[in-house]
Image (cartoon, rainbow, N blue to C red; front, side, top):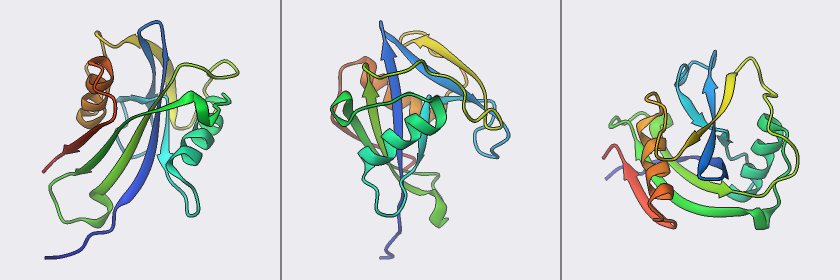
Length: 150
């Protein structure tokens, strides 16, 4: 048995009136042309998943999220089915329905557009693993433990 190192990341889905804020990725080399969580990114050394979620919300969307405003939705272990170390991941998905500021694109070199989508009418091009997390949120399966790619 071989041990793996996991790449950790936090995702924040801002929610309002049954809709979720998604960003259209561009120029990143990963999932460009796909609609993804409004704010997301790797957890940095010394950060908790909550700390990273708050930081990414501020850096990518310009909104202030308080720890109490984040609701842990699911934790997902995922892989692309290979042994590549960078594709062994653990993702924390949070929802947030209370924040300060108006979401805006602060990284235009990475984000082409922000848009609200009804949880029942997501765009076609959403990464499968994020679609799985969004379906769990839509269906009220908060605090689910999910796996993808195994």
